[in-house]
Structures are given as C-alpha cells and as structure tokens.
Length: 105
Image 1 (cartoon, rainbow, N blue to C red):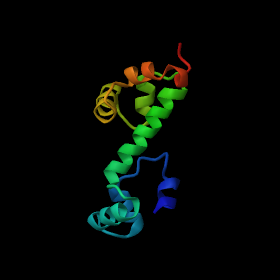
Image 2 (cartoon, rainbow, N blue to C red):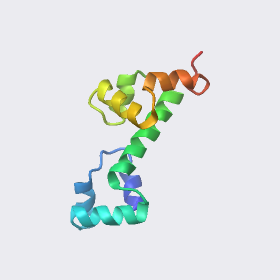
Image 3 (cartoon, one colour):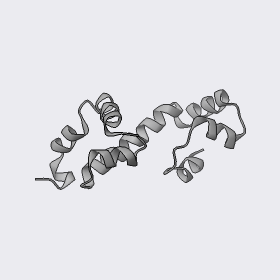
Image 4 (cartoon, rainbow, N blue to C red):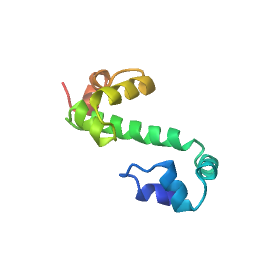
C-alpha cells in the first residue's frame, strides 16, 4: 500500500483509482486503507496536502495561489479556507508566525 502511495505522491490519487489498482470495491479498499494506514483515505490525503503546504510556506517565496495550485486546489480562497480549518490560521498568518523558516524578515 505504501509503495503504491509513494509512486503516486505527486498525482491526485482518488479512492476510486486506488480501488481499481487494488482490484477491490471502493468500500473494501477504504477499509483496507484504514487498517494499514491508521487513518481514512480522505484524512491521509488531507495530511499530505497540509504537509506539502506547510513545507512550501516555510521554505519558498511562492504566492498563496501558487501553493494552492501545487497542492491541488483550484483557487487560493478554497485553499485558504481548508488550511485555516485544519491549522487554525490562514496561510498568510502561518507564514508570518514562522518567518525564520520562510526566510522572511
């Protein structure tokens, strides 16, 4: 399972695609995923998006819109809403709170 996920790390893998590759129904693939990964498929994807977003916010001078696109969001507003609900602050606030990592002064 983890080998499959690592090969699709840059892709936007869906549960339907995962179930097709595994040869199982979506429901059963979801159950297997949770059993082996310890979280639901959607929670795993959310964690991956957040990890990549915080990495980009910390290390690169990209705009919020560029980061949003990079982690699979169609616009900065949707990304900002997702980020704030998950982290508790907006991407801009996060960047301000972590200036040393972001290389900002």
